[in-house]
Length: 148
Ligand SMILES: [Cu+2]
Image (cartoon, rainbow, N blue to C red; front, side, top):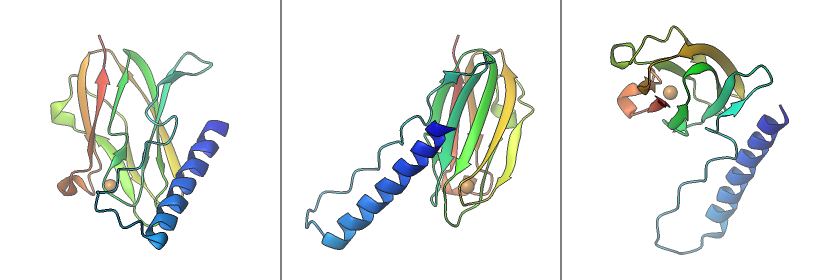
């Protein structure tokens, strides 16, 4: 819980820094570097009950942050946090491309720091693509890898 609060605070801090940079105008012609991934996102940890947990994020854009993460075979508890002010997203695994079926998804997740957690079992190593079906045409896709 504290970790997620910290992540949100970090995200807000990044936003404030970007806004300040825009106001002062540094005059550089170099393209802005993408914002760093907030600490903890995409990192797999093991909960007290032995289940591996990972949190990813969506924002007011068409990206999952991060868009790749790797888990071991076993139970996965995946949390999606939508820190967007405006945009609604979802997360659905791409059924016809999965090494094994995953009977879990997040059909809709509104803005304003809403979050949802799903839990599922994976046993077959490989790449498991997922997408936000609302923004699939805009390239909002990601991949969960199940290691050997
Ligand atoms: Cu989306």
